[in-house]
Length: 184
Length: 451
Image (cartoon, rainbow over all chains, first blue to last red; front, side, top):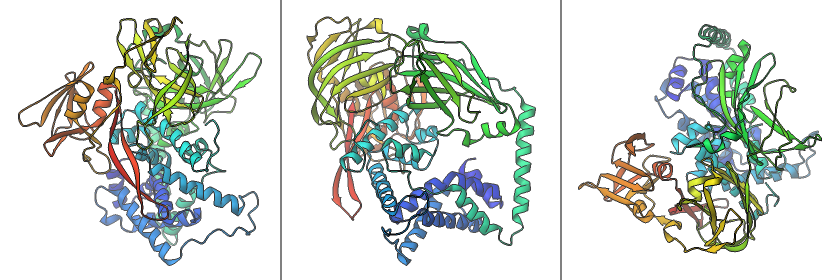
């Protein structure tokens, strides 16, 4: 379903369209929110803000413009993330906290989040169009053929650039002391 | 596994990436909307009706939309003339079914590194048909593959890629899939492939017949170019090449390089004397400090290739002694001015005249300068400011963005040049001032172009 059709269905009050919007845009909005909140944010914080953005979408569906749904959602999600930061900045993970059974220790959780932040920054530092290609493919889970079309690349060329970018990301993280320097 | 999981693994991330659970987001949103709201029942009824309607429509349509495109494992993966590799095409059709799907391997071809497939998945139940038709069918788990030796040892998959081919029917989707392995394949190995949505034991096994390859001993050091993602791109660096192995499908380079940013630049000379650059015949590289692997854009006819040229030395494929060759500066990478984007968020553009002339091509334009003919290699590109249709060798090609005049210069989207002229082009980057604890402002420089 393309964006215009999705907006049309939302305006009709179609909850299936809202489901589709959540399926389509949750990875994207999660990336936007995590970027705004920083590595200290928990998955629960991000889920809550992303959920709020979809609830706002449902509430304001009558006033949606016929295009720009993705950017509308991103603005809402980012603003809510900033509101959250102002109200209650994420607190550092307590290293002495007792971990949940089978879950990561606080130290492991901290390592994951710092790595995630470093990876995201490395992705954003890739030169165009590779940064967008990686973000949209890996973080936002868009179809490669759609991204390739938007970035004026053939699908094989996009695939080639993804491979190259992935290798480059590992090199950047190895240099930063965050990834293991082995064959990848 | 999500795509972020895959990226996380590729960069050796610790544990699993922090990410949100889409199901929890949906549950949270629906719970909030359903609290005291009668909409939910209507919604569920509508959802069920939609599934039934889709199933009914599919049943009515049946196989009316039969596949017509005659893809095979060579034409689906390689451009141009594939006839040099027809002898290595396995066209035996093999199928496996479970209660939901039938997987069919229509054809396959392999060398020692990679197996290329054309395969299709057909749905056998209404539920499977609905899922097959959905966007969710394409995921990281859609396909799996592995290889075994005659004594039962496993050769693990190192990478897999697939893309959907045109002309799928309503209950069948066709794919081009490539699977590469950490260890080289040999003629006695068996490769197994499976659709990830089928039963665990629903594998199709097929014998491997790797296409022959030629290994050229190099054992020389020289200057490579710094990787395109480095700052600035193109800075030279030293590396040592041990050997280069060419097959009809791939190119493997074994080397030592102290700096993993340094990449080799090689050329092929065909027996008719013409030169093929790396950007023309290779794509999709990957590897580490010791081995690099590329896929060929077109099937390589090894019988037509005379030599590999690297470090300004020519190494004949027949193993005879290498000889020095004169360096051709027209094939060296260069930079051209970065133009303003042609559209918001993308629209990367190049100055058509500067690019064409630096490549050594010919450039003509009308008096107003807003329509240009750019010729290089075997392709002539006609561009017009404001028109999203270009002509490539007389054939209309749709552009992502219309070319535009910028300060009297015709700026055109880079994709048309990359595709028509088989060049590589990247925007260089450099880190500038630090603007916060986390962010560093990036400064984008000129395009870095590799002929």
